[in-house]
Image (tube, rainbow, N blue to C red; front, top):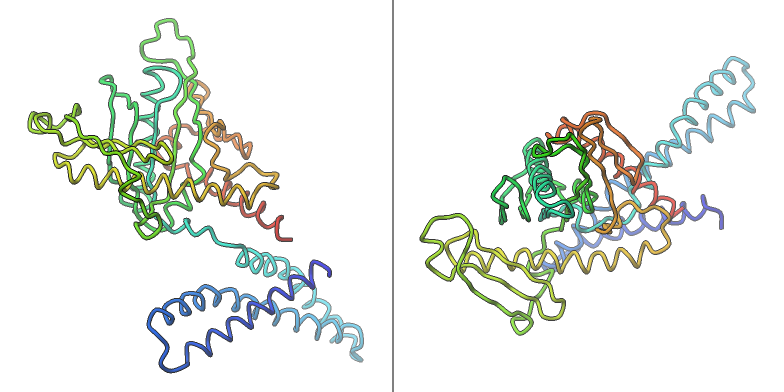
Length: 360
């Protein structure tokens, strides 16, 4: 079977399934839960079917024009048919690409909110200052997209740096836009405390996790060890006089989450469980992704946190994303969040191209 006939067969199956769902939704006495499930699938298939209809209409018009261009009696009509046929031929690849993209399996996590974690890596206080700068970069980026950015936990160094910072980002397609930010971010700059003007290299890590609901990840109480302790962070004396901070250890995986920002032990526990669910969900999602993408040549989207993904060189004013070999000489606009989409759009396109190569 040729690639074209394989694609046509796949499109036929989608169109048939769409028709089956339409008929099923019209049936009387369908249980409410079943209606919602079928309606969701029908809604997901509708844009694909609309694109298939447009593609097949174009192919039909091309067949008619081709026949007229070859067999028409009127030379003027043949020339006109050839001209129109050429215009349609130029539109065809774009429509075919659109249909193929719509056929790609969706990452179910793309539409979810996200939990952002930044941590200082190698480089001492300079790494902590860079982790804080990255955290603020994503905060500004979220504001530019109209997303809600809620700080959950910040562990400060006392000199303006962050050892660790965690936030929830809520809005439309948050995880889809931010998922390729996970990894090691390297910075090259002269620290303010450096008298000789020598450039230092340090790093911070970023993790972007899709937010998980209780229905996604069921956590057994027996799998948790919960410790409470006095909060050592900011918040005044009332915070420090009670055992309000919470540390949760997930025994099967060894994942540890601490929360101490709230005065209430109950609220800190709820926040910690939210982060734990996200980390467990991401663990499962990455395992599934690794299975599906074991043969991928592209490294985009693997979420491998040991991989250096981007370098921020302040003396030269440039930022380089090593996965797509893209360098922007506008470091201020990247750090303010304004130019971050230029990297994200290319990463999304590369990911689409890699996934298209798998199905073609």
